[in-house]
Amino acid sequence: MGRRRKNLTDQPFEVDITSLDAKGMGMAAYEDRKLRVYDALAGEKVSARYLFGRSQRGKAETLEVLRESGDRVEPRCPHFGYCGACSLQHMSGAAQLARKQNDLLEHLRRAGPVKPGEIYTALEGPWWNYRRKARLSVRYVPAKQRVLVGFRERNGRYVADMGECHVLRKEISDILLALADMLGRLECRSLVPQIEVACGDGQCALIIRHLEDLAAGDTERMREFALAHNIALFLQPQGPDSIKCLDGLDPALEYGLPSLGLRFAFEPLDFLQVNGELNQIMVLRALELLDPRSDDKILDLFCGLGNFTLALATRAGQVTGVEGSAEMVGRAVANARLNGLENVDFHAVDLYQPNPTQPWPAGNYSKLMLDPPRSGAAELLPWIAASGINRVLYISCNPETLARDAALLVNAHGFDLKGAGIMNMFPHTAHSEAIALFERSDPGALP
Image 1: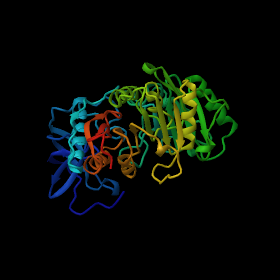
Image 2 (image 1 turned 120 degrees about the vertical axis):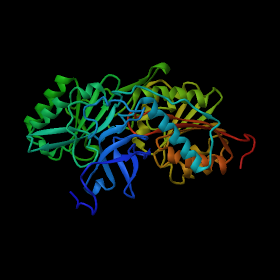
Image 3 (image 1 turned 90 degrees about the horizontal axis):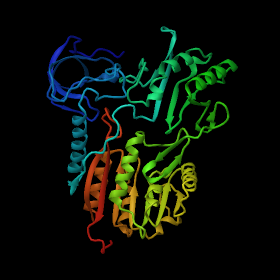
Image 4 (image 1 turned 180 degrees about the horizontal axis):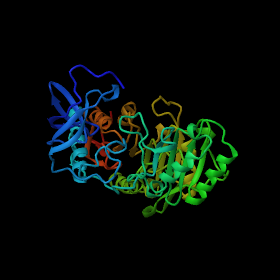
């Protein structure tokens, strides 16, 4: 623990919460200091106490709510308050959505200013047991003589002691204690640092990272656990390339877009949208907004394993997907074959580097699907502006970089922001995702 700072006390004090920060912590001023307060909502008065330690500088915890916000609800999960996975379970769903939508609009205002022609209703999926992808930490605690499996505590130093999780898929939440017990009986129990979770529509897989070779008895205990709980177990002794299924036969991990008749095969460490049900809603909304037609040639940048590409190909004349990972491009090609789609082609390209010899930039595209990483797509905007693309649908996992790119598209490159709204991919967290539609102001005039 870090040294206690001068003039700070561990005695409770009362403070008024004025707003929330980007991570959902209450913001206040106390004794001329800016203060972030865990588990407090805007408009509340709380009894709080300073937290000490380097990572907790400028932070306090709520001891008692003295004046309650109308947005406050009772958290459902018994681990709320120390588990770091969810920071907003104490806020009503309606208030969470309003906050995320307001944050998006505020980012747009500051960046441009850019005002969407329409504010889209927030896209919602399930609020509980929605996470089909996750990374769980593992730690053997000698003092407790057992292994802990869960998300990190909110201070980041320790693994939360979890017996259940209300945001993980129920198949995983229900076996957390059994999983911890099995790991605690391994000879290598102190050398398993993490477990990756990946769930398809019909099968869940766990990828166990282990730092030394497994004894025969450890392997057998894992096999018994996998059979008892109908879970596919993968072992990862080194880097991602070392992952192998425990029994040597990879299970068929798949998810579907049933309304489009599509199936997607994937490997356990592949990128997937975390909220599977919301992914279905999002893809249908993307089709509605981009409006692919039989005479359209559409470009999908950062296409991954083809989540949007194949959906677009069910309606468009031709779709080209571009992705930086050759492995994911291979998966996308296989998924196109799996679904019998022949009007698609894929290219493995680092989209943040110039690619003058690549064939895809020369395509005569009419519409663009854009789903970049958190850093956004600013490097691509000049090319987009110089192309014949008239409509751009931008899916963002970072509204701040979306707003930056929106300002460039609108103010520098001749596009209008037709509409924007948030997608609640991670309920009960401060994380926000967004969707935005751009159209060229004058389709007949290119730079």
